[in-house]
Amino acid sequence: MSSKSSDAALGGKTADVSDWVLAYGDERIPYEVRPKAGRSGKVAIHVEQDGSVIVDAPEGTDAQRIREAVGKRAGWIYRNVQEARERFTHVLPRSYVSGEQVHYLGRRHVLKVIPVAKPERSVRLYRGAMEVRTENTDSQAIRGRLRGWYKVRAQAYLKTRLSAVSEALPWIESSPPFHLIETDKRWGSCSTDGTVRLNPFLIKAPRECIDYVVLHELVHHAEHNHSPRFYTLLDRHMPRWQEYKRRLDGMAEVLLNE
Image (cartoon, rainbow, N blue to C red; front, side):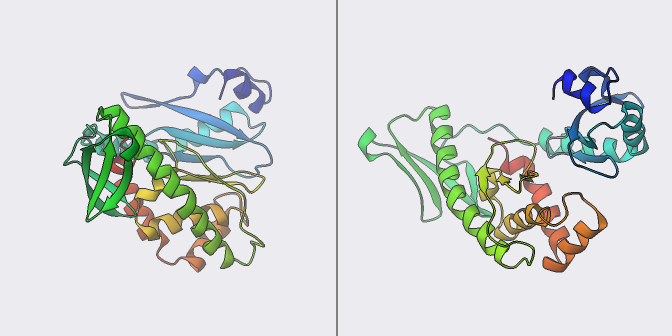
């Protein structure tokens, strides 16, 4: 979000992006403020999987009110940012060579790179291995081939789950518009027009975790904010959603390590 959009969101007060920093002890934690048109109620604070901090505020919210809201949750923000940093510290960058592990629908598979002529190249799951058959065995080429395979699988599978979960929800008349969007911060989002956007690398997660994310975004069709009613609907349609969320959060640093 640009500094100009920050000014507009704060009713004309000057607030550069660099102003959005939480001081907590010796820590200085930057955060992004996103003005939400049509949003009512309190300021909402999220710590994403990579440790970045997002603040959603009704459009026109005073800058001081935002800072006060962030300050009140300073301890919670600090703890969650530290936890995210610690998780990612232990994740080694991928080399995309045979023997590494890759994930698909919650299962681990051994990566197997097989040199072949260009007309024979392919990516497939075969006997417990993720085979990448290619003429170019450079690590970035293998990375590109895997990412492409995940996106194709995600487009089909996530669309199917979106339709299936939608059918069970009384406030959904038909499966909403759906797009894939790559991000290292979020598994999904729901825009004000009802479009659901899902991270293609969610396809690596266990099926029940995928359904949790899909349901989370579809509940926003009934309740756009994270209100008590929002969580009541989550509880009603997926009683174990908190368990699935914890599992997904715990795997995020591995699943998003691309």
